[in-house]
Image (cartoon, rainbow, N blue to C red; front, top):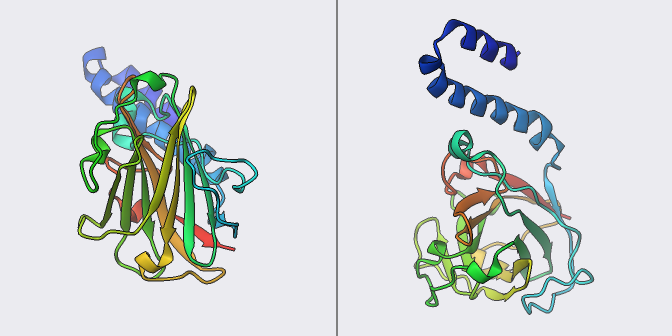
Length: 239
C-alpha cells in the first residue's frame, strides 16, 4: 500500500532526506485518496435540468433553482503539500437551462465578508485579482472553451480561451450576505454559437479565487496547477 511505502521510506532515509520527499509523497497519497473516496462518488455526468428563468437578482432562491449540482471544491494538486486539498471556504453551484440560456449560480461561503476584495468595475478588467467566481464551458464538439469570471461587484470578464474580444451578452447579478456572497448568471446559448439538445454533453469547470482572509484558489475539477486545464474538465448533460 502507499502507506507502507511511506513507512519504508522513513526507515531507509535520514530525516533530512525524508522531509522534502515525504511532503510530496503524502500529497501523492492524498491525490489518490481523493480519486478513490471523493471523485468516485461524484455523478458523471452532472445533470442539467430544465427550469423557468430565475429572477436573477443575485439572491439564490431555493424555490427557483434545482438542488445543488456541485460542491466540495478542491485546491489545485500542486498546492496540497503546503496548503492541504480542501479550501477554507467552500463553494456551491446551481445549474439549469431553458430554450435560450444556461443558468448558473454560485454561493461562495465567506466567514469574513467585510474583507471581500472588490475593486474592479470595468468589463474585461482584472476581475480575477478580486474575490471572484469563474465559469469554464466547452460545448460538445468544440475545440474552444469559454471563460467567464465575476467579482462580488458583478463586474464581468469573459473570453473565448484567452481572447477577451469575445463578449457573451451575459446577464449577471451578485449579492453579499453575512455568511456568503452569491452570483446568478444567464449565459445565452446564442453567444456560445450552439443550443444544446436533450442528452447532449458539455465539458465544464467552476472555480473561485478568494482574497478575503487567507488567499486561496479552488475549483470543482481536480486540477494540477491552474484553472486553464480543459483536459481535466468534467462533463454535464442536458436533461
